[in-house]
Amino acid sequence: MPSADHMECALSLARLANGYSSPNPAVGAVVVKDGQVVGMGYTQPVGGAHAEVVALAQAGERARGAALYVTLEPCCHFGRTPPCTRLIIDAGITETHVALVDPNPIVCGAGVAELNAAGIKTYVGAHEADAREINEAYLKYMATGLPFVIAKFAMSLDGKIATKTGDSHWISNEQARCYVHGIRHTVDAIMIGVNTLITDDPKLTARGCGGKSGSMARQPLRVIVDGTGRTPPEAKVFSQPGRTLVAWTEPVNEEKKRQFEDMGVEVVVLPGGSGLVKLDDVLRTIAERQISTVLLEGGSELLGYAFDHDLVDKVLAFIAPMIIGGAEGRTAVGGVGAQTIGEALPLERVDVKRFADNVLVSGYVKKSAAGLCSAA
Image 1: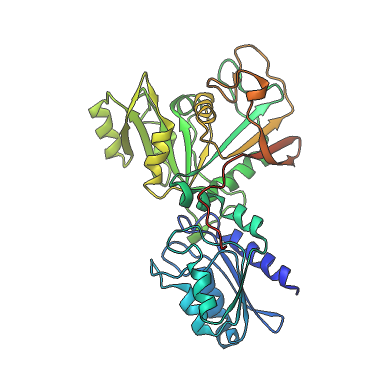
Image 2: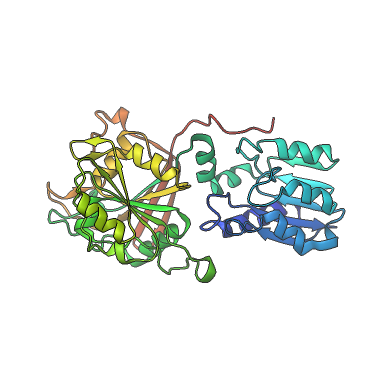
């Protein structure tokens, strides 16, 4: 197997960790001896072994004189687990290939430097773009302290997410909805506005459709943004497994707040005005709870605010072959929006997928690379 394939194998392993390694990065590692893979591993749930630890344990004595392929720079500090660099050195690895330097300030090149100082030849940069995409949320969280924000919506060909009566079940087809449940399994939180909660009464859970199950199963934090205190206690989200957080502004109905807290719901009261919770403040609040990825699932006002305030990192737009029509039909993104086409928000790295007769157009909002670590 060529060396490039070894790193591709490590990347495939890293993808298996997506959805339960957060707030740690999703990392894959492969140990190769005489051209043969003798150990493989990926990041275990928080507090568990790192990818390198799993791969080296599987390799055992065969790791001596072997090469290690890892998708992110090995850690060199004591955290929940001991430093991986020391384990790599003690295992007798003679060559290490690292796809991406860890932007964590307490690593950020120090891991590579320690391996080099121990006489281990270390190469950095193979498949870096792929490694970045796998850990795009971790990279942003490390650089800014804020979650990676994905805006998701399903709309008709004429850009509607619901009829004028609010009916939206179902615009997307079953295959597309199944794909979304897979995404829900990989994010830390799902966020909606109170209007969507009242209109659709969603569960906001990750269910089936190829998602992780058993000991790997987890539910994302459900976040309800409600500037007017209209969240109904009987909503389905509050009877689902997992945690729910409601973000309110002053004034707060203390009796209703106690009712939610007695139900196990976390209520946070944030600055605001005119019945509006500032989404910026909500993101900072959940970031303090180690939430590094958020899936915004509507509605129009919430998405509009997010786009108007440059809070979105990635867009997932599902398009169904139907015409809803009507001037009062609800559009996917509200807010102020662009005044001219020249001000419209372009996406880059655009991808298109088909789910039977539905189409998914995804892309990234262009962001600055400032704050990311370099191995140079």
